[in-house]
Length: 181
Image (cartoon, rainbow, N blue to C red; front, side, top):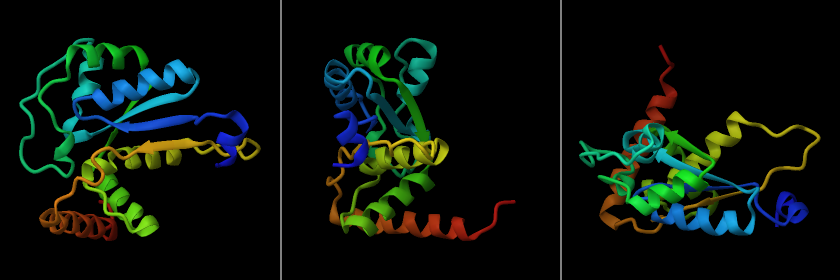
């Protein structure tokens, strides 16, 4: 166990990718009943931010579903269910948005660390965790935070899709080499 979990007995935050939101609602329900102080952080691709937009307006909205090619099309849905929306509205602490570059970098990093190939939808939560840590570094004197990223749909990749993931990684690598204007 990491020091943060050993000291507190619980994770500081759990990152969950959002598609229809059922996994997120279930995780949030269990975590908040077990460890109320643990942050539940939903992570969505910017191209499929249905929960974020629904929470902003306070009601479920309908989206036409995937428009064009999206890196994480496995989490693009048309509408969040009413009970899932109610639970997420009550229990989710934060919703983060990640872009395709961050998702592709998460796929790459998980592969380099573990030799496991996540499909992009499964890497959304990892991308959110990386973004969160980069934007909120812990205080030097504080124990390191303990975070968990649930890589739902992670192993749902079809062999034929590996080439499209590789293509996305190549586009991201090229973009990283090209200076911003």
